Image (cartoon, rainbow, N blue to C red):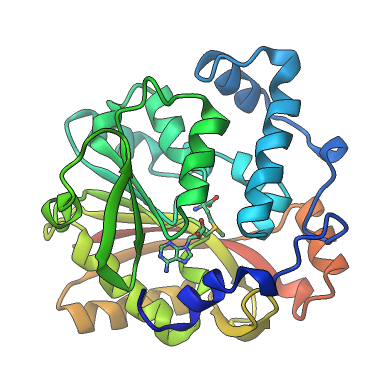
Length: 302
Ligand SMILES: C[S@@+](CC[C@H](N)C(=O)[O-])C[C@H]1O[C@@H](n2cnc3c(N)ncnc32)[C@H](O)[C@@H]1O
């Protein structure tokens, strides 16, 4: 594993509070399921409607033990954000015609499952995460071990030599090297915001390297942003991160472009946090509570 802040933050798991009284950990009774979530679990995962909530809660609790990310504790992995992205239709048509998708820092890889549910051939979809435990739990959550043909890699974005296929069939151990540079769409959802400014920049340059070297390649996702962009200290991993707005995100990709000799069209908007997320942020007594938002982005190679 590369020697850098996030790998060590994620590896030093004992340092993190897995208590169920933690502010990011929502008790199961607070789980509210959207009609889409119930439909997907019923039709794709074959979980009876009246058991969907209990099923999700018990797998979520196992994932919280792997690493207590806020998106796990507060059930945000049920957002299926890709289905709400302004380029969902474009993504579907690219992938239907054979394009390849990588869910980076996939955890439960819920958006990958939403794509399969929308009719995309699963063999064109890949997932990657530092923690193999999350990848295993993603099969348990979606109950698709016998049907899903996607390959999942365990790997650290800062060191491509660590990428190994761990689930999805008897893949070539060097498969990642073969698909590197051949990916049409990367989902980087709640991912780049994990890293301090220098590491975030390096991770974005690595993303450019994995994408197809052609106009039209896409990086999409959303992450925590701020209406007053700047450095913020976060307790998870005890580090400083830069919270972007649409303008600083564009400038960030301009710098990534200069470093990688590429050009990017950046469409980004900062959305207000939903009231329940705002309440958790307040309860966590985090700085800059009022100015936080969700930065939703689509970054397209020119
Ligand atoms: C906050 S979670 C987001 C998960 C998922 N993308 C979502 O939106 O629900 C961040 C994920 O990134 C993974 N991760 C953290 N550092 C990583 C690294 N250096 N390389 C690859 N994955 C990493 C974590 O294990 C975790 O699954």
